Every structure is written in C-alpha cells, then in structure tokens.
Amino acid sequence: MKSAIRKLVKIGKRSYAVVIPKKWVKLLEIKPSDPIYMVLGEDRSVVMTPLRVSGVEEARLGMFPHLTISSTNARALTKLILALYSASLQGVVIDSVLPRESLLLPTELASIEWTDVNTVIHFKDIRAGPKEVLEDMARKVQEVFSLFTKGLEVPSPELWGEIHKIEQELDVSVHLVMRLTIRKIVVDVLKKGLDSETLVESLLNILAAKVFEDLSDCIDRSAHRIEELLPLSKDFARLFASIKDLSSEIFECYLYKCPTDDAFELLERTTELRKELKGAMSISTPPLLPLLAEVDTIVTLLEDLLEAALVKIYK
Image (cartoon, rainbow, N blue to C red; front, side):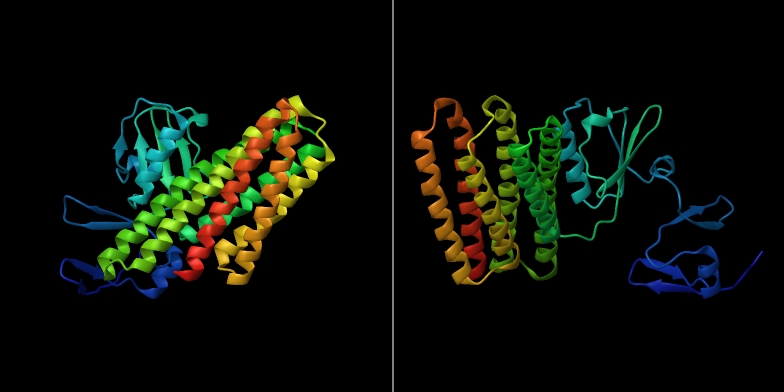
C-alpha cells in the first residue's frame, strides 16, 4: 500500500483540494478532467476512486437524476432529452423500460443502456458548437440529395429507407442546434453581455438548421411519390441534378461566408432554376405536379438559406 501526506489547499471561496502525487496519477491511468467518485465514510475517511463504469453503474451510484414519463412518442422524448442535455446534465434515468425505437438520439450524443426496470441515458462530452452541428447537417442533406438522384436511375426501397433514416437524424439535429445556440447565448450573457452580432448569428444558425431539416423532409416526401411516377423524364433528372449541385455551393456559401459576388451569382442561378421549374410545371401531367411542388419548395428553401448567407456577409 502506498501512502503520502499532503496539505489541504483552498481553491476559491468554497472549495478545497488535495494534490495527488504524479506517480500515482500515472499508476491510476487518469488525467485532468477525468471523473473521480468520492465517498465520505462514517469513520471520517475519504475514499476516492477513478470512475470507469457504465452509465447503469453511474445511475446506481446516484449520479443521474430520475425522470418518470408515460409517453413513448419518439420525437417528443428526443426533444425532452435534448433539453436535459442542454442543461449540462451528465445523464438521466427514465423510470421505465423504453422501446429502442422510441429514442432517436445519435450515438455521438449519448449512449443508452437498459436495466430490468430503467432506461439509462449517458450524455457524452460533446465539444461541438452550433457551427459543427450545421456542418454535419449539410453533409447529411447532400447525402440525401445523392441518394435521391441515384434512386431516379435505379429505384430501390433500401434507398428510400436510408433517406427516411437521415431525415429523422436531421430532425434531432435541429433541436440540438437550438439548444446549443441557447446555451451559447446564456453563457455569453453571463460572461460579457449579449452583443447584436452574436444574437444575429444565433438566429441565422437556427434558421439554417431548420432549412436543412426541411430540405431532407421534402426529399423524403418526394421519395414516397417516385414509385408511382417512374419512369421519370430525363429532363426532370437533369433539373434535380442541377438543384443538387447548386445546393452544395449554397451550403458552403452560408457555412463559410462566401464573397458577395459569389452569393449574388448563386442567387441568379437559383432564379433561373425557378423559371425552368415553373416551365416544367406548366406542361406536366397532373400526377407529376405534387412532385414538382416539392421540388419548388426545395428551391424556395435554398433561396432562404442564400438570403441568410447574405445577411451573414453584411452583418
């Protein structure tokens, strides 16, 4: 047994610390910010143990708050859990065994474990802010565009399933962006007060997140209509490919603040695409019109994101 004597050190106004020898830290294989579980014994002893246990064990140790809920609505539950995450909790114990399909949390955000009577959700330490989540959302929307384009050439129920799965992930990401943005605003207010630039950027990020989610939603709905309309004309496939390419450039313009001239050029190209789409709608048969209406909504959403990009440039 190793032993050492150390003095108690005062940290701030309310806390104290004891310095651990460097050799012990190496032996314990721990590093700064690692969790340490502490127990104050009845004999006035203090036992400290590096915490390397599962979420279930952490819950048993009383580290997570308990929550009793009756709903199994997947979206409602996910929004509630994201709210708890944004409150900087380490995890939560739900006092019931929830079905796996009722939780839409991405694996990078949380791990989920089940006991005989509880569902234990352990939040991971995500360093990402709204911008990083938006970059991930943009990548996923481009993946949805690619899957849909591929499905126009070779229809596949598996492709439509992938599109729907990504749409659900983006629905979760929207609420994550909202909560990360709110957290950033609160932190900025507490530290230095809220300036107008931070507020405008925060509102634009929430708008962009909603645009990304709505884009995937439009394509998801369109995928369900395709089976009834195939084969589609080559003109439609070419039009959609043009929209896909334009969307990629608009995403980059928003995320990385493109030059003003580039933004206006993209706006002109969007206007030309809308004219082409209107022309296609005027000569199309009734069964195709609902699909073209979804594509029209996609173009409108891209215009919205481009206008937000212009605001970022000039703010």
